[in-house]
Amino acid sequence: MKFASFQTKDGKATYGMVNGDRVVDLGADRPHLPSLKDFIGSDEFTSGKVAAKGQDYALSDVTLLPLIPNPGKIICVGLNYSEHIKETGRSDSEFPVLFLRTVTSQVGHGTPIVKAKNSDKFDYEGELALVIGKPGRHIAPADTLSHIAGYSCYNDGTMRDFQRHTHQYTPGKNFDRSGSFGPFLVMPDVITDRKATMLVTRVNGQEVQKASLAHMVFSIEDIISYVSSYTTLETGDVIVTGTPGGVGDRRTPPLYLFEGDTVEVEITGVGLLSNTVVNEA
Image (tube, rainbow, N blue to C red; front, side, top):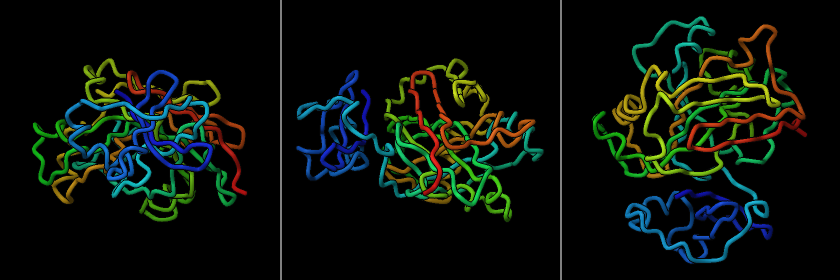
């Protein structure tokens, strides 16, 4: 099963089940479950027996929204692949490096991402995102995977100069519409072998990042367990698990994003997230 959040041509925001190049609107018949976040917390979703009935649309006729448009939290992990740690010149950390993104900092698949007018250091970061299905606090590592509703792709777009204004990452990571999330929520069982699950980022068709999920310094289990040690993870919360080496800021010469560029994040079995770059108006 695959799911998406989308907007129809008449401006209605809803969600649905994806089948090939079409999506069935599930939200229209479930007013008590107004968003995909609400739906993944329902018995219908957790049972795996989704009644895919309703109006269907061609994916080409809808606008895909950020997969979870209304998460309670978007928690991102920094410095979580050894090659990225090396290229930044940072030292290893005993605990995951965490920061938050805001809802307004992201768009969906196929919608342009925005290079800020006050920065010429717009960078890409291809990442695996996971969505929490079952809430929890103080989750033991052995129990973490049962709390995942599914996976998706993420581009943690960053204005590097603003990221470096202080030791806090927040400004550089939260420019309006600078990141992207999608296209679909896929079930956790699509990732069976992390060594064979490759995360690849491309800029204008050129491969710029490539690593297997097995190269994470802190595993998915580590991250969920650690985050839940200080905050309750709730249904619909998003955790973005870190980027491999190869970011544009650390290349010689640097490879920053400008208007007209296209960024793709592809993860084996999870999907392909694509966005073009436009300048801030």
